Amino acid sequence: MFENERYIKEFTDLISEGFIFIDKEGKIRIYNKKAKEIFGICHEGGIGHAKGKINVGDIVIIADNALGKDDGGLEYKDLEKIGIYDNKIEYKDSFIGIGIYGKKNLPVYKYEKNSQDILSIDTHFQNVNIRVQINFLKKFMDITVKNQIFKLSYIHFMGHIVVLDQDTKEVKFYQKEGYTARKESIKDLLLGKEFREKGKDAKELDVIGKDIFEIHEDGDTIKKFYQVAKGMNLHYKDKFTQINGFPTLCTLVPITVQNKRVGAALKVEDISALKKLIKERDEALLSIQHMEIKMREEKDSKDLFSDILGESEVINNVKKLAYKAAKSNSTVLLLGESGTGKTLLAKAIHQASKYKNKPFVHVNCASIPKDLLESELFGYEQGAFTGASTKGKQGLFEVASGGTIFLDEIGEIESFIQVKLLKVLQNKTFYRVGGTSEKTVNVRIIAATNKNLEEEMIKGRFREDLYYRINVFPIWLPPLRERKQDIYFLVQAILPKICKRMECEEKIISGEVLYRLMEYEWPGNIRELENILERAVNISEGNSIDVAHLYLNILNNKNANIKHIKSLKDSIQQAEKEAILKALKYYDYDRNQVMRVLGIGKTSFYEKLKKYEINSFKKTENSS
Image: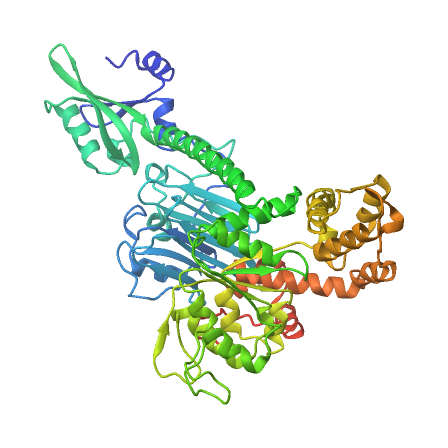
């Protein structure tokens, strides 16, 4: 039977499934190339390393999504090898740890129970930048050391380990698939077992002649495989099972020669590859679905926001965001200079929303006297103050109930009204001026400002908690000077409306007029464009508007150009401040992450926080 094993091996290496044959003693006689690929025995790519073992002083980095499951039976006591003494770490906890082997130096570690999202550590340990993450959603873990990424994907459980040399701080060992077969689990290595070399020229693990239990875990499939080789009457075809943590589709066949059992064969298909194909198909279908949704949203945004004129990329992006805002209940904050069309956009969002058949109440907070704004917004009871109506009065929030209230120029309101407004945003409740009964309103809030509210916050003129309440769905409207390609569309839409309102024949503009309009910097934005066109219609006598009919404030235009040019020092400082603020927000105020991504040291980072008056602590709803 075994005389022709070499030829059989050559034949089995050609088939697309894994093939393993063991004799009646449980010794491996054939283990084809595909089986080695499935179980990671010949997967030796990467940067490579020499054989060896962990020595005292080496840096050990561990990522384990379930302690004790697929790591050689790791326990919390084993972690004492890298200086972690914590008996609260339990079986199946998700764990990340970085420590020094055989020493009690202060380690860095985290652990969680029933993790659902991402567990990560990003640190500067022993002068080495190390980042470790376990992604439970996408089922992978990676260990990054000095920009070298060691990534492993898993199906159920996995233990990942990277070891750095104590002297050179270079990678001495990294984990790869097939560590169960190589006996290179985390526990094996922590207990002093040697690891094999890796890389292009590394010698392949020789499994021929080894006991099947030396290469594979003592699981149900391997037990049955061994028992059938010994004489048990069992066979099956295409059975879903798991071997060494790999999901497989197996066929088990007893091998009998002249009525004598000589062993058993196991044909193995890697269904993780099938799962990958199914995932790729699902992702492709999902991508098509997202594309269809995106195309539908783009069409709807153009149809529903046709009053927002222009076809530039920036204004189309505004329309898309406005469409999404209209479909949500979140508070919207419109940002931009005066005259950019914030009021028009607020009305368009209301009209595209489920509130379109309910009131739209526009409140210009800057135009109402400060001592009257509270009573205008929230109403008052009879006799609340001198001159108050004997019947009392509804506030604008009550008038807008069921619909939308648009708080224009919200940056102008006084701090005591900001407190009351915060309560409305949080609970949709308030008291009228002089009232004792609490009013409840169901109202959609859209706010707008031409101020930099973050700067107002730093100066103490705008409450931080209110800012984070209204800045749920911000939309920035670009100034006209940043979308000059839209001027032609704006003129073509605005000019006929002006002529109709003024009851005169429609007028056109010359090419030179359009050129002058494109050259102008528009400090007053679209509102200024409308005024200039209306004046031109008034003074032009024929049906054509020429350059002589334009009134462009050239002095203001030059000042606008100068105004928007900052010194190099100011520009650098502004860019630094914005970069820090963005990074803090993106990394959820994890200062270590921010320092790493910005590439600056701790001292420099905290100096810049102080210089730019940046609060680096996470904002909360109750912060003030």
